[in-house]
Length: 363
Length: 277
View (cartoon, rainbow over the protein chains, first blue to last red):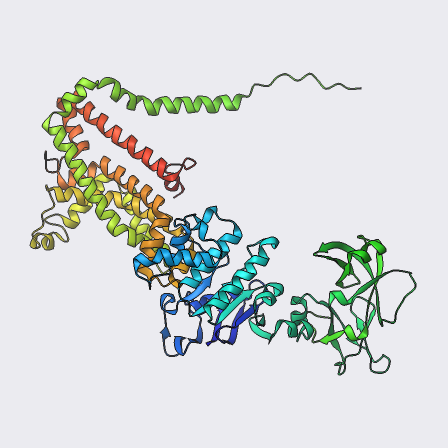
């Protein structure tokens, strides 16, 4: 069990976090750039001393600022996978791994290092220098090195960020192999919700230095606690003001950019609110076409961009506020979607979820 | 219809100026060096180097510069690492103090060394009580060389350590290595080319050292008379011998420069770090 309670002043705000991770579990801390994610990992590893806090792992106290306990990084032995991997450039791949094998007799290290490389499918590259490896190979080398040092916790700093889309799938499997093999608490930090949901059992979202929401990836996507969390999970977020109107069991919200949204959510607070809709729940119709079906939400919008992503198409729209719809390629062709086209964004009242409005925005 | 005036071909005069300036500089800088080898033929060179005074001086130069360099590297490397990796109050002032010997005239350095370590100097009594003699002794030459040459190494080593990726040292620590092992196994190998350059520059400076040595240790053949001091003494009596000894020093210096260039790679600019200071 890794437990931490940290407070440290960063540029412009204070990072205050309390977290606990069970062995074999992976917690992802997700937040925007500059939210103090890297500082959090460094503080846990002993590379940075927070202003105040406690860190304990396996019942051993690593840090207790009140009791003046602060174990150096080499005594905490965290398997730290750096964003750019921090491989030693002047050492071959196996020597990079052997560097963390100080607990083994010197003669046994090469053998053990090659076995670790084999585990990640790069044993044939044992004598190669890191500079000659591809991005995916470097990542696997960094994972082998972290695993070899018998880590007591794993700390992963945006482990997929440096990789291109084609390498990400194998890299994800390698990371799952690492967290399973190490069987220690794992903590991942990233700004990418998708990366977090691929790798973590649980996600903690930090906003302005504090915990905004913690839960399983599906829970966060389905029931975001704030506009910030909704935006992070890729949902559309629109702000507005609750009106008195609406049919039975429905509430109407006057949107800031014009237009009205309808929700079936119960207990909609009066005054300012934000609504969120998943992009795949939004359908598009051409403006002026006869409406079909019964969706309650109909918002006129202008197409800004049309981007194929995987098998689907992301359509960025301007309806006074920006929103995104995700449609099939067939729908794009049928409607002739292109930038400048006038459309109507359509979704069901039950797809409109209510969250507290984003902080710090006036009006 | 207006036609553009036929263009008079313009003489590219600035490239000519640059080429001329480079030619003048090249001739001026290489002529004296070339003259040494042209004047000192192989026969004179061989016979002059047979002279005991020249042999003694070369041998002494080799011994004292090597000893001084060993001391500089042993003390300077951890000191430079500290300056490169820690931020503390007064660090900038400390670095300036360490660099001061670079700009102090050698004669002033010799006077300063006498005032500090000479028989009547600040620490003169303590040094004498310890049974160590420096003035007019080979040990004194080493002291003078260390004083004038060490800033060259410290400066380069500090820059080399500052250029080491800080995540490498962080990774080393999380992999179970303490600060000493990180220094020896990660920081030094990563900074090795820069450390090599610094050592070569310091050695070059020590090899040419003249003023501080003359004032602090004197010019006694076989004891404190290094090659540059011997050249000055020979110059009055035996110009050919002075030429021969000079030729040897030039050859050694050229070899040193070539080594530095090789260490820094083909694209490197020798002394660029010094120029940037």
